[in-house]
Image 1 (cartoon, one colour):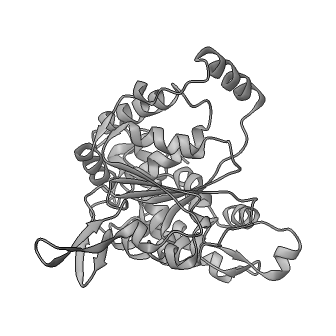
Image 2: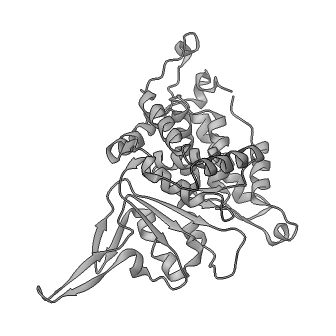
Image 3: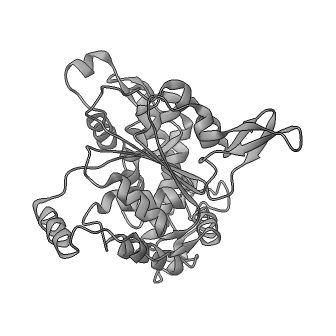
Length: 352
């Protein structure tokens, strides 16, 4: 599986662009692999981020790594889990490891779009209206309990999440890069919540399901909390990345090599969701691009400048699970989207 990037099949390995492996790679088959991209600084930064977060958070490695991948791919992430599993704290700590602007917005049923985007205020001195920017103008925005706000407020995020800009009174305001939204929601409690529309869900790169910690991790959580006397010192977290570093790494990720047969593999997975008898709604081309970009980032943080099928499989579930809708019959049978994705991955032949 690791040698898929050295396939001699010329027909399946013609380059589509500079980021796809060339037709002939026999010279790499006989020599020790050397990365064509310097990924060491990126790997070191990722390891430093994990170490900083580990000062407070125990476990939750999957959530942390997927959030890092979302940053590297310039994608938003939806974090879902029951209360108390450190969703919000982890997102705040991750933002703390980066020397960028951070804002947190608590979504409530009475929240208005102007509370997020800002509003025009009349200036008596100048006798003109002035636009006062809202908390969305930041680099990393944490939206807590995003499904607590009504549809009108949720719709205020459509443009800024997709286009990184806000249009107010006919004027466009660009968001300073990097701009990322991390949103949390509770999957259990439904009272006082509003289901996110598919159009908004599709704007999230990942949906990250956060589970309970293991017994060993829970013991460690109790021990650490007791030792620090129930205090959580966010000032102990050092900043690892600047905005310039993040943008540089995001550009570096785009250079990771992807072979044509792996592009075909991604397309086959997503196409299957549109013809699958278990699904009422399949995934869009945005999902294909999300799997591609996330796979590149996963390869890079593992020190490889080429994507493997394992990179694709690792990212596929987090990309697809919030984009797919089961048929009513399958929902009544307590079937899950995760099961459908697992079946699809088992069905599609893995490139060799």
